[in-house]
Length: 251
Image (cartoon, rainbow, N blue to C red; front, side):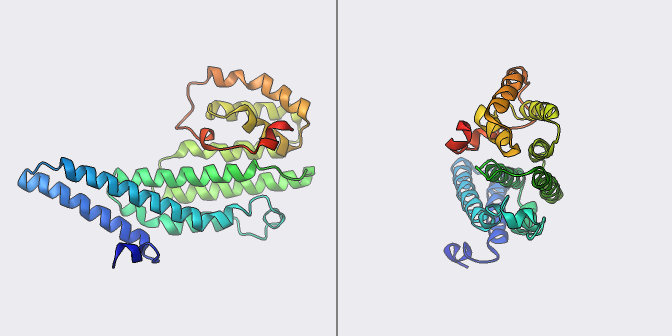
């Protein structure tokens, strides 16, 4: 099958995995059996891997964006959408990555895991209508449920990115919390786990909770020093790659 044809085929991912594995085996075989200098081949392999990774992630975006855009819509809140629909789509698309040579498979699976969580958070912090307490609690419960399903499915596939697990739960706790004094503690936990979070992210999340401008500003003032004392979080950067709509920072 031609590569250009394979990109649009249902067997694209297994084709990608087999292609990279075979090339990797070829390079390793030349090194071991014939003591060949494979420096140039290694560069080609690295370039191919980057190219395949970019194509894979582009296709993952195409497959998942329609589902991600439903988050916090009225149908999503009313549970018209199945809570495992996003996780199922991602799992089916990325299932064959577990057969890819390491560390390539693990690196790509990490990218998948991070992409899904990042895009989920991006959808959450978009400006929304004001929700009443009952709706906020519904949203909070569903977010926590979906987060658990997403993380469970990707961890089962071999992802080691457990540092991504708390972020959606933290935001869900903030949204669903009845007592405003407890919200500060949840925001502090979020800032400790993800020290790259910015002021506009925090304000956008608090706006979704329905807090007024003065209350949001006060909470941020009380917890922003947490970032300065943080040891760098549990994993990589997340919020650095998440843009906030300008309107959110102006509430």
